[in-house]
Length: 209
Image (cartoon, rainbow, N blue to C red; front, top):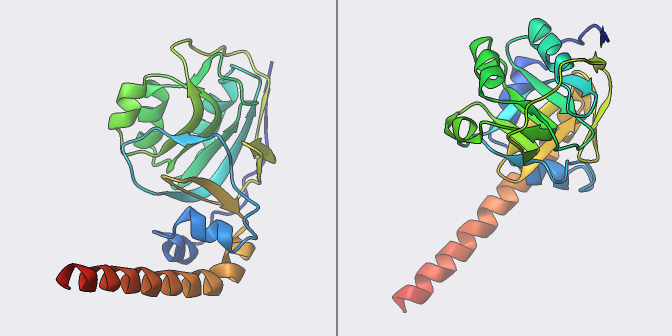
């Protein structure tokens, strides 16, 4: 069976990526009415923020032919977002695919499905999020699609979306939406900074008393 390949939209602008670098997913979510965000998709890598442009992949349950096809067209800075139907019976990627992706500059993976070789993934700094783990390998028969809207843990991701991930989870939003909510994000970051500083100061005064 074949893989349907669609043209990729332009990457998220570097200045917008820079603005969102280090922004917590919780604050992004708060400024989108707390509605968008994947559930049940957990980080398995060493740590660090995931940020980049969505390269979306739709696969048959337990089959990674479309992921291999995506790696052939992936650009530096792309996040490979895989709708595996939430199936965790077969791993969709492991250490070999992760190492390949890292070598070509892929920014990370978000997989609504299973992974394997978790020890290697936990030692890696390449961000990798998934629904579960299994030692069982994938089929490679297809079908699949690249650069189509996908659903990841209930979050709809479109090709070209800005994808941000941290220890709390994953959010994805259009570049236009990201630009629109940036002032509100900055304002909330400052409010939270001041509030936390106030509580720390109160605690310090209590200790000195």
